Image (tube, rainbow over all chains, first blue to last red; front, side, top):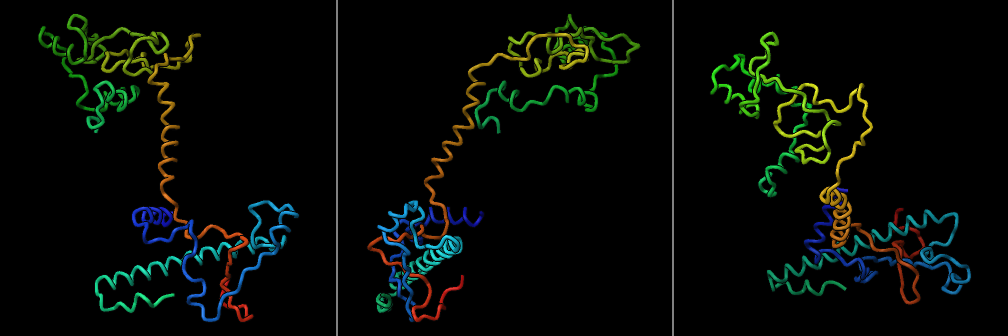
Length: 114
Length: 183
């Protein structure tokens, strides 16, 4: 709880250091993954979900009834990992911009991404 | 600290109040508050002790010598809690006492075994007392709207749903090995 409160205050004072939660991941999803990443497959299409009368907040990537909890947990972990990745790439970009600002010789660093 | 909030003397009394019951204990345990051992005789001494006990000089009468009380005045019982009118403006309305009034030993009793009284234990409700009921909801509401400006630091994105145009990736590797993520 203390980490949450201090993080909230830091986010309120330095909002430029944190990614925007509403926007979602902005960097290239494959950057930094040489072996690629697997696609997430939705179990049902939109029409099938409407026909089955699934409640709106449960219309996500988790199909099975019996393995639902585990799937939900894994999805939440994925969201946290995405956020962490986004945060680290964001901070890395800020650091590079700082270096360029202080020393304009290292301009090649600005293009070393994406 | 009280003068910073702008409280009057009367409000300071009511907020920093020492309960009436503990003054009885303190009066005899605290050496500075003990009565003097000599009964005053001259008119000046009587006037000074009457001022000390917050009485008029003509009202001050010492106790008889066999009581061995020294300075202390003999006071008629002015009335217990239920014998006093609730409509007066007391300094301590919960005890129906005033600050520094000369008190008889039986006046501190609020709940007596031999009390026979059917008067209600109510006190007149003023606007100030009613406004105190609004303190808690007001702080709660202001707090909620004040804290809404902060976005709480749960370090994860909102859960992603399968939209028609969006492509979402897991952290597993794409070569069929199932590696790359450890749940």
